[in-house]
Length: 251
Ligand code: 3PY
Ligand code: MG
Image 1 (cartoon, rainbow, N blue to C red):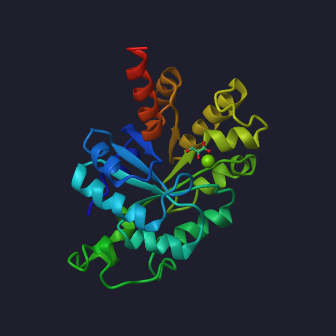
Image 2: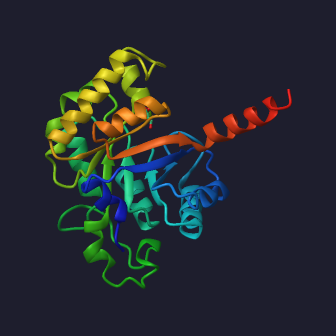
């Protein structure tokens, strides 16, 4: 099955998304019908475990055309295998700092002889066996997004971008700010400078770049700079803001 998201970011079509951390399959179903290009299902932070992500993927399929992106908690290849089996075709991996780590992740999402992904005959990803050519065609449609979130990752950006199979980079502003000595200040001008420079370097190396940003002006700036994917808000944020605003109209 075609991964339109992967092709869109390759073709520089900006993808706007919503981040989710509630772990709610109902919220996932509602939000996938709202017109966003992608929805981030977070299994790094937030309460979602594997089976909860699985049900959120089912909800996304029912809810609308929005592309689910799953952020996994670590680099464990057996866990990556299970998420791919569950039907994840766009995988985001946090804290990717080195070429060795990035290469191991590429290998984890590819079947032999190109990689080490374990084979299952009829996973959900293959329509439970109905998509007969899944194993031989899935590699083209799997999108691997790695997250540079440390100063070490920044040193290795060009080398990681040169790896075939690393499709995109999603900058983690919170962790990157912490690594730069500005914990809790992802909008600090020094941090923004580094992020913008990193975005330029990734683009110059020919790969797509994205970020989470809830500031409108800065989001427009990232779009101007050519960032291809931006998570512009979150389920938790919308719920909090909406609930507070509603009450404030009467109090
Ligand atoms: C971070 O800000 O560190 C993130 O991982 C956001 O997605
Ligand atoms: Mg992070």
